[in-house]
Length: 298
Image 1 (cartoon, rainbow, N blue to C red):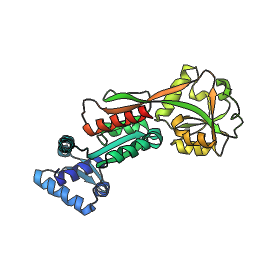
Image 2: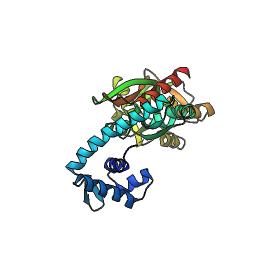
Image 3: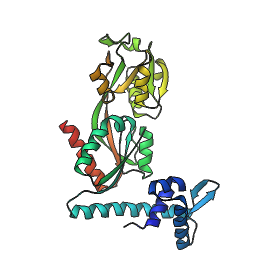
């Protein structure tokens, strides 16, 4: 029901790219240009400034985008309400999740949700916590699930699931047969950590600080951008890493990785659902209720 030219404008305005908008909408780039030109002729003003291959919004484009976002939200509400009258859940839902959540926590939830609500078209983006928070502020997604301690006042955070960060090593690591290591010993072994901006790193840094240890005190071999790359690195080195226990369930079952307890150090955290303050997204709310029920019953 949404005017297609307005949808084209909205997509171009969010991505600031005719090429990316064309790919997302499954139309050609010339078709995108034609729709934008027709809309600009209709309103009598340019909506984009073009400089070579780069585009940006004009003042008129910024006004149009603000209204298009409201129209999009109203359209999602309309779609949800009409489907509710038919006793079904349908529509589109854009979810963002920090890397650990997207890789290890959400997949089983998404599979069961899709099995029950096949008419809901879900898209999932992943990145570090800062990336997902920004995507929510930019209205690229309706809901996010993240790790980390820092909360932005523009967003509403609710605890979703408790997680533990554990110290791991490959099974033949010199420490793998030890029941426990001390914090002082920890400083002497090469360590692989997640990149800056990662909620996991933020939680690790806070927990170590509580014990009087700074990241600079550790023998950090490198910072890597994903949990999978860290695990793969460990299999080829004598490094150690702090990782979510959800991320190593398969390796623990297969016996290829060991958890090593650190004396006087427990790192636990909550994963949080995040939504924009004051926003009501019925489909997003339904998904979050389903996800919470799934983990409460597991």
